[in-house]
Image (cartoon, rainbow, N blue to C red):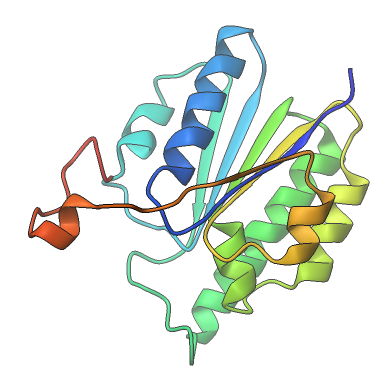
Length: 172
């Protein structure tokens, strides 16, 4: 069966969470899953803590713990995003996964750490069976058009704006 390209985007909460839910389903069917986080480097995320406990699940982070400046990204942020992208390309070439999630890659593109053309080329060169998920805010029209499924998360209300701090297990 042919693999699909999915985009989880929008300003609402739940893009990474939805991708992790899809990973859990795939793992339940004995699929091999690669989860590559762009612009994230904290080891405090629940998924990072859980990754080593899940068979057939590989999670790699390619980012610093600090936020990236949109106007003036640090050269190390660009390098880490490019290194992560190179790893994603390697994963596709080696055909070692059934599902790959490129978490926050859409933000990395919007911040000009990776180009739209690089990602489109990657999508076109993926193994035919591979399901590929792109997450993050700011999905460009090119990604919306090439994807088989696009889900846009819309924020109606968020506890953070009501003074509730980020909660472990919920926000990270």
